[in-house]
Length: 485
View 1 (tube, rainbow, N blue to C red):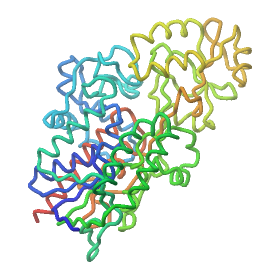
View 2 (view 1 turned 30 degrees about the vertical axis):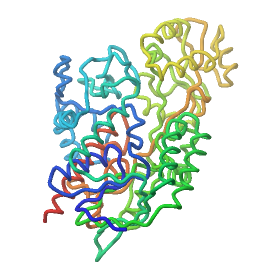
View 3 (view 1 turned 180 degrees about the vertical axis):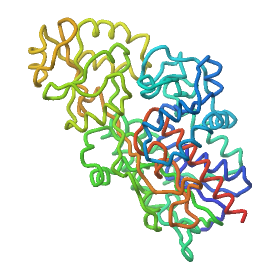
View 4 (view 1 turned 135 degrees about the horizontal axis):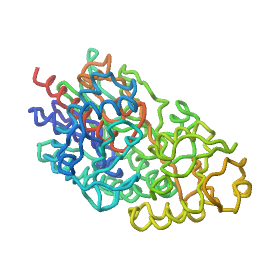
């Protein structure tokens, strides 16, 4: 079986959808391949896009922001993951990028969260999603998709609808297994595609396993294991690409062996992704001659808030030494915790604890509530003195502050089932920053977490989705240009 298109996209999450829409808009015929039914980690995400410099929502909310202020803050976070020129372009195009997403049907909202949080409630959709308030000229740049609960599902649904409106052919349950290389150029993809009853069962198992994969991994792994077994019934398929193949197949957090190879200190966390985030797309690019970078960069999320009162606490390690800053973004503290062997506690006094408990109802989204109640219940120990509470936690006594009694909240990587520590990979294939082409491989492009990009050094909420849109659109546009040549 054979199919032919100008541009072939591997992976149907945010990056893949954006690449497909842009390529099709430019006049190319486009085929998208996805191992499952689409969505990937995007559909499971919070649907937050990092954007600034004067977006419509910022202006409507009365927020003052500028490209220079956004660039200055992100330069600190992004460091040398991309060139200053690329980061400047990312910031300059940011407001237009969000407007483009709105044109595709993705809804956003100007209601600003009045308190520090890792994710706003359904009453708020614009917030300080990183460590901006520890930097000059802070501005809320986290634009959450307007939807109830976690918004990633609607974010992807609207992009998928735009993809199909653009005339793109989407082929779900089709796994890319090898790139076709002709005279040194990538010219297609060898796949295995499911049909009939295996396809029906595979779809049912993968849909049923999506949430358990994140929240109860043993069940999720069993369901996806059965789905993977069904893939042996896939029929061979070759999809020819006139001039461009775009790899947008996610990262590799679901391949624990690969994570251990590149970042052995990062263990015990929750793999934030899907079984499709197994590094398969990255491997395809390497086999074709591409190279990787920043494969040791893992984002570890250890959020202290909500409730916002907890950011007044002090982070301490097993030796009772203070470190980090509870007001910073969760990934910054997560990395610091890993550097201390994965062990950490938050020291608070009684006044902070009482205020935090009073804030639970108004400051938490429903999905956060069970974690917060765990933190403020089974996740802490209390005692009249710092020495006694440290003995209960099994650590050296830290320096006291505030007024007794004191509590220590376990914020270690392995803090318990009620307080998982999400992790995702940030490295991938090295690409030309002007075009998205995999360096050294003609006809091959990469985007999203399959490629090195804006968030490949460090992460703040919304930066990965923003990079997926930025890099996906770039790859689609340039692949389509090649198709017209």
